[in-house]
Amino acid sequence: MELEGTRVIAADRATVWDHLNNPETLKACIPGCEELTGSPEEGFEAVVKQKVGPVKATFKGGVTLEDVNAPDSYRIVGEGKGGVAGFAKGSADVSLADAEGGTELTYHVDAKVGGKLAQLGSRIVGGFAKKMADQFFENFKEVVEGTDA
Image (cartoon, rainbow, N blue to C red; front, side, top):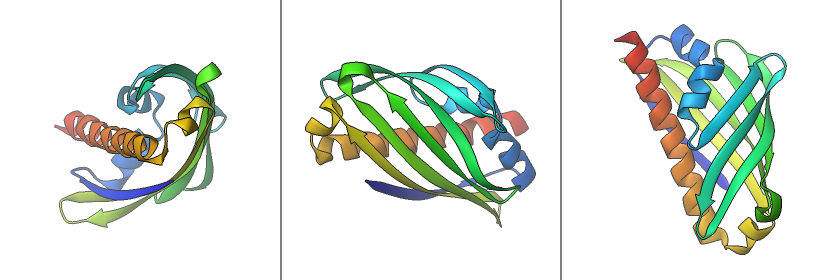
């Protein structure tokens, strides 16, 4: 499943880039994130609780940053296991560009799920994934703009 979108964030590119690499910002922005440890250089470990349709799960997994081109773009690659609920894995290409009023953040997500999650059907899982991506980037925008204010 693929998702893409853009957001204009009222902050300069260096500030947005710093937040994209800040574990505290990322933890605050990931819906259901209970724990996030690590660093951009070595990768992050996360614990995220979510409910997808009738399936509730706690996902534990890792995230690494690849193809880092500071302060313009990177690729986030992650995988989480949710026990009997199944797994989720995917990647997101994130790029930044100067825009009127701040920085334009563009993302392209490619995600896959397996196990019970995959049995829910693409409509439910696709809707959930879109909601999660939208919520993450809205939260991110609020955190970055709130910090600058």
